Every structure is written in structure tokens, then in C-alpha cells.
Length: 158
Image (cartoon, rainbow, N blue to C red; front, side, top):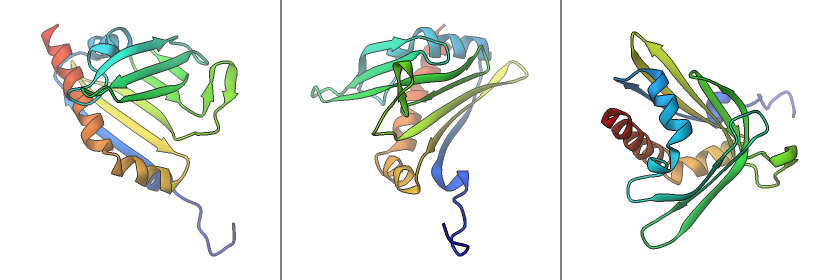
């Protein structure tokens, strides 16, 4: 890096989705950690594979499937799980802290209590601006937004 090249800020490598949900954070956290296959993925997708070992270094693996059978795998590890406040996972590592050569992002999901409601924030922190741009063009806001729609519906049903 030269003096003329300022370091990248987190914001130029970050995508964020925030929503106020009219439910306690414990209920939302519970649905996130125990019922993920019921809501993970955009509308029309299913999640036939879901493995979660909810501890730092624990496996996080999903496979989302479109109606035409196309599959989108996610594999990584949890970095932090603080019930009912925060979940952090990354695809930078696989189990046993094995580095992943195809790193893309780290996800930080927070569940902030706001008088019995929850401010849900999902942040995707990317290693490069290019990866952030790629994720945005892949439909981050729509896809993660639709997943969140599905989570909210699930939580509101009970």
C-alpha cells in the first residue's frame, strides 16, 4: 500500500440489512438457531441440508435448493454465538480451523432488544470491495430480505 492509497473502510466492504420485528429477541434467536431450514433462503427455495454446531469453531453448513433443483451450498464455521444477542459465522474457515481458499464473507447477526421488539441486523463483511460488489449484484438485499421475511412469518406464527 502506498501513501496515496487510503485503506478500505469497513463500510465499502459491508452490506447491511436491518429490520424491526415485533417479537422478543429470544423467539427470533430460537427460530434462527433451531428452525433455520424452515426460513433460510429467498422465496421459493428450500434448505434440505442444515448442519449447525453452535459454538466457536463449530460447523455451519447449508444447501439451498431452487425449484429447478439448482443448489447453493454454504460452508463455514461459527466464530461467536451469544444467546440471544449475536451470531457470527464465516466461510473463511472450515471445521478444525482449516483455511478456505474461496473466502467470501463473514456474517454478523445481532438481535437487539428494543422494549420487547427486536432490531434484527444482518451484516455481511467482505474481504474485498470486489466481493462486496459481487454479493450485491447477486441480489444480497433481495435474497437476504426474503429470507428475513420468511423468518418473521415463522416467528409471528409461533
